[in-house]
Structure formats: structure tokens, C-alpha cells
Amino acid sequence: MPRIKVVFSIGSMHGGGAERQLVSLLRHIDRTRIEPFLYLVYGSGPLLAEVPDDVPINTFESRNTNRPTVFPGAMHRQRVNDMSHFLREVQADVSYDRTFLMTLIAADAAQRVKIPNVSTIVTDPKYGFRSVAGRFQSVKRRRLQGLYARSACVVANSSGAARSAETFYGLAPRSVTTLYNGVDIDLVAQQASVSINDDWWNATGPGRQIFRIVTAGRLNREKGFHLLVDAVAQLRSLNPNVDFRLAILGEGDGRQALETQVAELLLQDTVRLPGFRSEAPAWYKSADLFVLPSFFEGMPNVLLESMACDTAVLSTDCPSGPAEILDSGRFGVLCPTGDVNALAAEIEKFVADAGHAKCYTSIAAEHVRQSFAISATAERLGNLLETAAASRKG
Image (cartoon, rainbow, N blue to C red):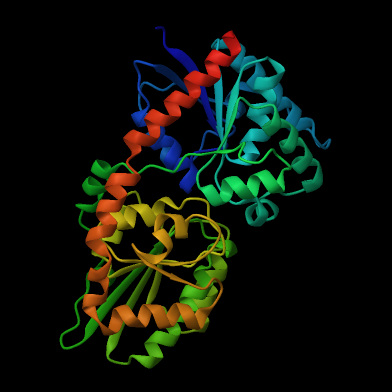
């Protein structure tokens, strides 16, 4: 059976969860079944270097040399047109896009040239759409409704996001398929074995307990990092004999606001923002606790990777992935969303009792290996892509 040609697409290769998951899928998709291509709007981001060598990378900005236009919608039309041409050039059998902003381009392009598309929803749209959709949100929502309805397959990375998307976009009940994010266990273990070259993080305090907390994600308000900073400020005042370390990994527009908050609370020796770290699992592995303080999520890779590193995890019980990952608290602690006091109280339990973490770590790591291996995710995606390709031939 000949391989099918699949064009994978996303906006750029910056260090968000959607981009990292796409890189993992490109690494693990079965080459005997699928010939992958990558199409980006912008050829930028640290994860570009991690795209497998056998995957051709094409970008709108390198293919399109026209001068930017100021007319509303004109740039979007150029992008749709260019991707339509690209799909024809490579004789694609299927288009696969990740994030709804890319769906607006890729699904539109694929449907214009009658190529089946598989589109992935990576966060609960009830909460995540408004914060990133930008201008003309009602127009974009209507377009997405039509694009999803005409797609060969729509996938969401959690069951909660799938059901929410059906309601939000007016799609048929149970029409969105759930495909959980996968974790590359071997790669995480390799990255976790790297030494962290940071004296602040590695410091030991004679006669004093050092408690290391790590979190990671795009630096924006929705991730709730400001709540975690406030919680650590509380904990430091309540535990004068404990030296806290909070590392917030990632980049984003919210960096300056977080840095200002840290300075105002006089936490410069307690909280650091090391930026995007390719060796993030090494930080997870060396931490006493991973905390995810988000207001909403899809299926957070960082939570899964921390669990795979045998690190205890604490997450807000936000829509819609954490409770599914943690099985409603069996594999990690869930606390109310947006509640600084609750967040501090749950962290305090780990500080006060070193054995508290052991209630979760070993069973959580095994849970990730059994239920979230990237090999299984890639195989199931391959099946969905082959089914989509067959629908065109049929």
C-alpha cells in the first residue's frame, strides 16, 4: 500500500504545548504509512531545530514575497491561497492542522482544493477562544463552525475539550474525536538526565530546608503564574525556616508583568524566570513539586512530562485536561481554580510532609507510560489520517 502524503501545519515553532506535541508526532509517525511535510506561517521558533531531518519545512513568509496589505482579511486570503497551492504542489492526500488559528487557514485551503482535512482543537474553546482569537471573533467562530462541519475528522486533545467544542461551535454531539497528547518517555528521560547549570536552583542551605517548585508554559495571564507567585509569597512568610525556589519556565508577553510582580513582592531571590528551556524535564526531575496554576487547559504536556519524571504534581481543577490526566485526583492533587489560598494550602502539605509526594509519584509515572505513550498516539493519528485519505478516494 503506497504511503499517503500528509501536510502538517501550525503557525510557528515557538515553545508552546501544541508545537511541542506536533514535533513529537512528526518524530513518531510511521514512515512506512505516511510521508510528512510541515507548513508554517512563520519560519521561527526554537523547536524548528527539533523537526526531524526527513520532514521538508515550508513557510508562508518564505514562499510569499508580496508586500503586506492593510486591507482586513487580505493577508488571510493570501495565506489560504498559498497553502492551497502548496497542497497541490506536493500532491497531498490529507491536511492536518493544529490550533484553531491554523484551522482557519489550512482547513479552508484543503477544502477549496478538495483535499480531506483533519483539524485538532488543543484547548477548551469556551475559555480559550476569546483570549487568542484577536479581531473579528464572531466571524472567525462562524467560519470555524463551517470548516469543522466539513472536515473529514475533528480531533480534540481531551474529552472535555471535545464536548465543549461541539457546544461552542454548534457541531453534532459526539462528532469530535478525543485523541490525548502523547509523551515521548525515552526523550523525557534523556532530557531529565541533563545537569542544570544554575547555582540558584542547585543551592543547598545548611540547616535549612530548600523546597523547589517548578512550573512551565507560555507566559500569559491565562496560565495563572501570577497566582503561584502570590501563593509562594504566602508560603515564605508562613515558613521562615524554608528556602523556597520557584522556577517559571517559558516565554511570552506576560514576562514583564511577572517580573514586576516578583520585584514588588521582594521575591527576586525566590522566584526566577529562566525562559524557554530545552532541558525542561531536568528541572521537573529536580523539583520537589510541579504546579500547574492555569485557568484553563487542553491536555497539558508539561503535567504529563512531570509525572513521567517521577515528580509530584499539583494542578488547578481547570477545564478541561488536568482532571482527566490525574483521574480526578488519583495521580496528583487538584485544587480550585483561581484561588491563591487553596493553592498555597495544597503546596504547604508537600512542604510539611516529604512523604506526601510518594502517595502519587510511582503510580503517576506508570499511568503516563500505560495511557499516554507517544507511540500509541502517533499510531492512532496515523489511522485517522489514512481513513481521511480513503474518504477522498471513495
